[in-house]
Length: 415
Image (cartoon, rainbow, N blue to C red; front, side):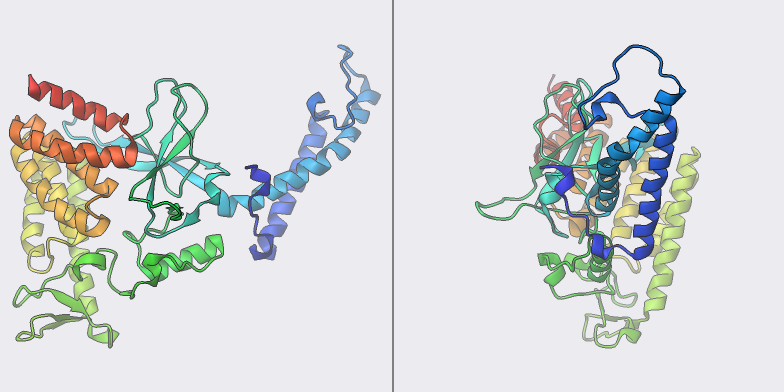
């Protein structure tokens, strides 16, 4: 499949953007024309100037004139590729360690290291709940696909060869795909991270189609978050601790307790304010840990957890983030067993938001295995290893870096 034949959606781009890109290509034409003659390999007429002598002024002027016929197809191709970028470019992300280098606990975040076009992958259709996972390889010798690179939108299907062959990506089946079933990947907006209307709007703006995937055709709960996909709102009634439900008929009433004998209501603004207070405390705690003050972070997180317990169910993502931050604080202080205990509490929220078979759950369980290993808890560590191996192998492949580390831990505990 050639990049040239990918859809450019010329009629969907605004006149202003089309004009800007045309001017950009014209500017490149002028710059290249003044830079000197085109490479001999671009000579469409088949003639060449391989005399080995420096051209005089007249010859140079002739060479510059030669750019005109050579650049007509080149300029057209460049403009076409610029138009194709919006709907076909893929973000290549890398997991990068953050925080103090000498800290016993390293946090990580995904950063974009490049943008690329993989023509074969562009043929796959989008789903907000895809049945595939994407794994990048840098192509460097010895680089194993799996943990360092991931796909924001997606990429091309290739067999990893272990040689320097450029950046490639493996498309792995993340779910059982029956014969004849369509292979789908996510262009970015995912049902576990965005509500339906937001996903549809982003896809319409960038890719010019109205998404009708399975996740987008389910009954909508637009004012709830992605965390509500499986376990209700993830919020608790402050009076009776029963679950709260979003009032879909009258948006102004906010949330109502599911316990008929209670019926307590909370306004959307009140819920938003409580959640925002928790988020602010989380940001402060993470900042304290980044500045190597885990004891202060732990004090703040304990207070926030106590307050959040009045309104957050264990399935709510913020509950999971709090538990994860507590685990990090304990681990930074070398209390591995307490760290593992708190990290377990975040697994419920991870499973609720992303699913029990997700890569997010796999990485969470891998962290749990590391904590058990560091704490010398042989039994708990070995009990987690099989599920970690299954999930990471499913999404990242059997040669990923995490599985190599897992094998080292297992060998060490088996001695």
